[in-house]
Image (cartoon, rainbow over all chains, first blue to last red; front, side, top):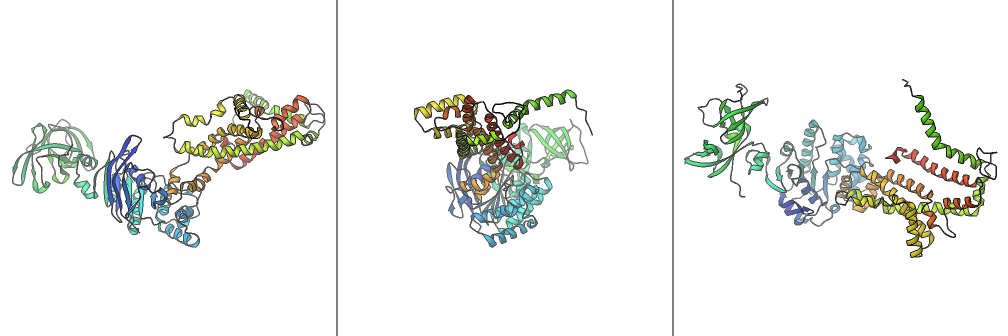
Length: 355
Length: 262
């Protein structure tokens, strides 16, 4: 039933503005891939292209080997869940869920049976006769989910399905969506701007920017080993320091940052280190210490903010402005000279980017 | 909890109310008068001037014509106006802003000008039959109301609902009838009523487009007044009022008059 989705070198334009640039993406059978990015990055455009509401200027879209590119949207057989639910206001919950089955010519007892079974799965069997207007946000989204799932589509697509719900419900619903998706093994594309949501729910996440996929990987890889500066910043590596290797000694590499700051990095912890690279560190990846004997980036501390688990400092260093965290046990005052010591587990190496 | 209302406010309200309702009461009174001339207050009470309407052949014919034209022109305006309003709202971003103004144009142009130009260009130039010209004129007259009212109810329509239906396998045209229309039903009814009333009460356009053998009720009323000064005039007016009020009452009962004000 479920099928793999492939997008092959898709470009799309609104008028003369290019919104997608040569985008390729494949989603394996039963996999859930999220498209993650800020608004305007092209994630919704991608979803609407697959749904057939937009036409690409070039490229091809295939689902289970079937070419969708020129197929009208009502023949694509894709389950869609919208941000604003998009329930039919004049139809009861049961008729909403049964709508897709009706279009497929499934009638009478069979339809009723499948609608009831689906409503039971999302826990709304008791609301079958209500109109959508009488439901809460969470209930509406469950109906929308049931309506998309009941047609047993080979592909399920979600367009920011949880943005209109409150925080607590959002977490419950994403677990529920993931469980239903797993149970059915339906290939899914999930569009969101919420990083936590994307990472928690997906097999793989595509981080998008300016109509391109910047990196497509498992959440773990994206979080720990971003491939480029954009993704690194996106997943919270706040400090990007351009560096140049000046000496190699066995497993130790000495590299120099702007301002003449030298750091010794271990190949064991960082893997391969190219001659020129960017050291990306989270705020937690630069430990603030007033022990000036330690090896690290010399810094003058600026504004201190309280994070609950640590103090965060805005720091002035020869390598530029950096953000670093220090222990709660030793709050330091602004103006104090300190060292910022890299914590390898919270840092990563970015290869130089071509362009 | 009572609140003291300024006496001047009460007086002002009563005056405005009288100004609005007064003429209607006078016409109603005059229509019920037993005299052979128009007078108010009525002298004697009788319904014979109402009977008189139906005895005069011209009135009988024009009532039928007026109802026909009102119904047909409204239907034509709906057939053109609903898709137009749909397109204007669905593709608001892609379409130029002046396009929706274009559909309001017939109400902005003085009706007399519209009537005259229709006469000159349709009836004279193309020698089109009177009935067709009249129907065309009325359709044009009521189209802006249809487009406006339907647009108002489409403005709050969430078009992703339409996409949801299409993604579930319903072709666009079918979706239009099964999903879109049921959700703007009240707008369609309101548009129908507004258009119908506008058409049936119209003088300015009809006066140019009626001709020998074909007239509408308001035009026939004017013609009658030129020759006779009997209460038939008042009773026909009352008849038109009743028709309008009846239609409004249906709206009020089904949708609420506030709907029209939107």
